[in-house]
Length: 452
Image 1 (tube, rainbow, N blue to C red):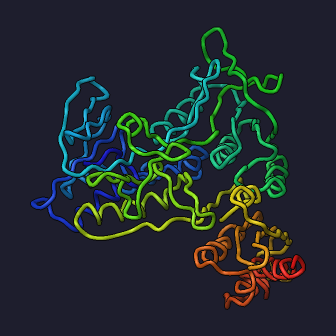
Image 2 (image 1 turned 90 degrees about the vertical axis):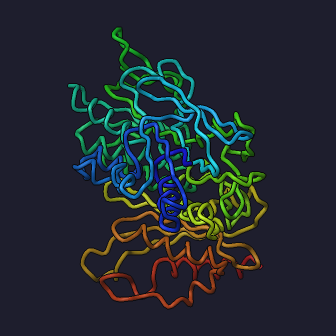
């Protein structure tokens, strides 16, 4: 039995079906929405008009899963876990009818929920979260059904900046309110400042240090403005981009082990700790950070799909493990590319690491080659050992995916000196003779040596 019909849940179901036929293993999946196996990461690009067909975001429909003998039950919400009796209570979202269904093995893939702080007016009409395809459709319907052209985005993380771009592409005047020092708190503030400058250069108003206190409503109950820092910001539509939290209310009620961020705790096989018949994966779990050695909540579709593959193999009697992550993520706002992996400065301090930081300016191609675009690379390296601890990259075309060099190096535990000697591909259309990451690594080697 699978609870949750998106990346982790349906990857687990599909992998289990590859290994076991319907005569050997019956698979049922409950999904409270209208869709399965879709790309939530693609929603901002659909809203912004880069992707024009919603169905292109759906990797596999419920009908395709059913054709492979996976019993997908849409609009069915699991409301209670009875782990002792090995059964779950479900509720038909449309009719309200409830029922109990038994299982032998249970997979929790309940995902994450958008953070929605308990503020006055937060549930008013015109306030939108963006987590599911249903959410995206509701926002698109609202954008096409109103005359106003002012949008306020609350939060400047990945979803916030991506939705700011989407609304800008739709012709809206966009204001982004964020309580942080700079946009993109997954970056250090000095790198976040580069993102802010680029957003403002596009005409997006960015207000930092702005703690939202209320969504103000018109007499008809619709949102009309957002209050923050003693000021009011008029809005015809409000989009919440504050982030997400693990959706583990079922797990909490059942007494399952949760980590510091509220995510489920699993072993390397993605089995919930202390349970022999229960696995969990995707945005509802915490995973091991291979750099810091601590567990973190990192909600990304890449991890969810990999974890689902591991779960499906183990549920079907095979073997698989998910060793952990280094925290790699990329995004963009219009033509600006943003990437990070490993630890930020405050992450490294929090786990007691001492380090040096270096920042370099470079270009995506040889400087003389047409189209060479600027990029800024920042690296963190451990004192004495020179071990790479983290990387952040902000730049134009060709910048973001260079973070994969650092992601591999972090996974392998490489030093910045080893990165300098990597045999990377070079030709003027693709890179300077010294790749920007290696330029930063060379500077980091000198900084580590100078620090003793």
